[in-house]
Every structure is written in structure tokens, then in C-alpha cells.
Length: 247
Ligand code: CA
Image 1: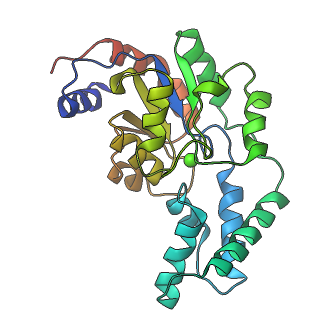
Image 2 (image 1 turned 120 degrees about the vertical axis):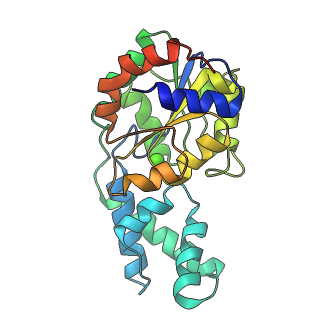
Image 3 (image 1 turned 135 degrees about the vertical axis):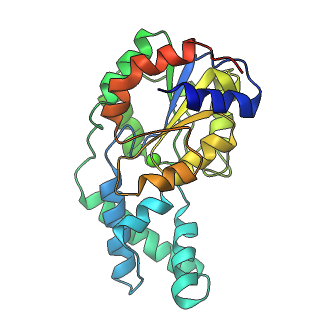
């Protein structure tokens, strides 16, 4: 079932196999079910200022910098860039709204899939554009012993951020990995683009309200409707990777 997608990847990149050593997990919307809170916070921060942005649109922009997102909306609605002060005010408001929500829970299936990764002697790593200390600290709390901080890539490490391939290339470097020794798990179009641009086999999980086609259009090699579904298919997927399909 997965052989076609794996073969397409191998042909495109001229690899003979994917020799899986590490799984690179995005954080928001993959490990934590935090995206509904982010989308709600964006919606409120924008709409109190008369800026039109739906919650669904927030999912499309997920991973973009705050100023990048704000400028897209300003340009569309008022045909100009936002000023530095406007950006600061809106982003502050967004942060206040986000913090009104309770702490985001672990995504259903996340712990289970991490256990499967560890059991197979692979290294799970987090690659996130987030610099929120509350979430980073909570990784250890929610997923004890799963992640090695020195291998993680966060907002503090990167210059460009997703959809630039830099965060995933940095994760390969930190883990001393080749591109065909890891896979990426992402939920957002820009995150998928980053994984694909880094040349890594990228699996999209559609944990939000997006049309699944959006994630395929971003270049995802495989698509699952949830982390739990990916988890349920995990053994079959690993078997397909190990089968080393012919080019
Ligand atoms: Ca995400």
C-alpha cells in the first residue's frame, strides 16, 4: 500500500532505500493538540481589530512568523504592510488570547507512536517553529524520556523557519543523519513544504480542518487523517521501508 509513495520518493532523490534511523516530529498539531487554541487566538486578535481571518485560515498559515501572517491579512484587506507597532499589538493580543486557554493536551496516539519508534531503536526528535517555553518544558512532562534536548530544533535554533528547509536540515545535522535516514511528520502545509524542501520523506497528518488536498499539494509523500491512524499503520509502514523497493 505504501510502496508506491516510497518508490516515488526514491526515484525522485536517486536513493536505493530509506534506512530509517530517526523520526522528526513537528510539535503543534502533531504531538500536542494545540492548534485549535492558536487558531482561536488568531481569530480573536484579528477580528477585534476589524481584520478578516477565519479560524481555518489560521491553519493554512501555521508555522509562518507572526509578522508574516499579519502582513498577508493587511495586504489583502488594506493593501499595505502592517507597521511594527500594529504587528506588536496584534501579536501581543494573540498571545494573551492563547494563554487564556488551558494547556494543550497530548495528541491522541502520540505517546503510542513514540513508544513504537523507540522500541524499533529509532530516535524521535522534535522540530518546531515554536519558542514557547511552556510547550517546550511540557514535552518532558508529557513524553518523559522520549526526546534528547541536544537533538531538538526550536525557534531558538533557526534563522528562517518553515517553509524554509533549514529546521529539518538542522535536525539532520544535529542527528548526524542523511536525508534518507529520517522521516518527517507534519500537520501544516508550510511544515510539509519544509520537510519536502529538505529532501526528507514527509508524512502529513491532517489533524485540523483543512482540505486534505492542501497537504498533498504541499508535496506530502503520504497522508493520514490523524496521528492515531498513522500509529495504527506504523508496523506496515516500517515493513514497507525495510522492503527497500527497487528503483
Ligand atoms: Ca504543526
